[in-house]
Image (cartoon, rainbow, N blue to C red; front, side, top):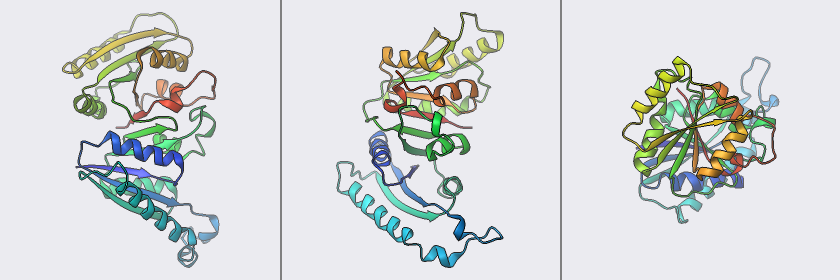
Length: 280
């Protein structure tokens, strides 16, 4: 039984992420937790940093969010996504967003967070204000990011950009193994360098570790040279018709270049392709 956390702000983007999650996990028994977090304002915190419970109790946003969550739960039950293998639960809290996410991950033993995002320029200009940007950088839990234009389709090819700086902790890649097994998909391991050069000794060892780790699954290695990593990723996504991009969060070199930048022209993978962000 997988435990999936679905943070929602009741927007079209968050519903799109819910739709994707229900389709992506349609063959698995899952507990889905719909979570809405009411923001904490400074006026509900006293001078000692404690919550003013009386003001929180009278906050009509709590009642409203509970009502909306129930309506969302019913929408799923009455939609094409109704699935006997799925159980849908609702959670509403008044807390700091990241703190709420962390607490629920621990309490519900969450395996994966699924979140929607919006913006043609990726996470670059609004990382500090984006809930999704905050989650994938501050919460150590596998997160599936579903962009605004992403619609579920059969997962046939997954791209894994890497600079071969991975450590021996290949257990980080277990969620990718699960997808390869259950979706009968192929993994395309992509290395992008700014200039033509051979792999150094450590990189070669990492490559060999990856070869061994994915030995029993369809996979291949691809090498591109481009001064701009995001351009190379876009080219690869287009040429291979990639269905998902997996990223190791601790691999900061690639992670930040691919996810966080201000470039908007000709970069569509931020709005079309789901990202699987892997944490230790």
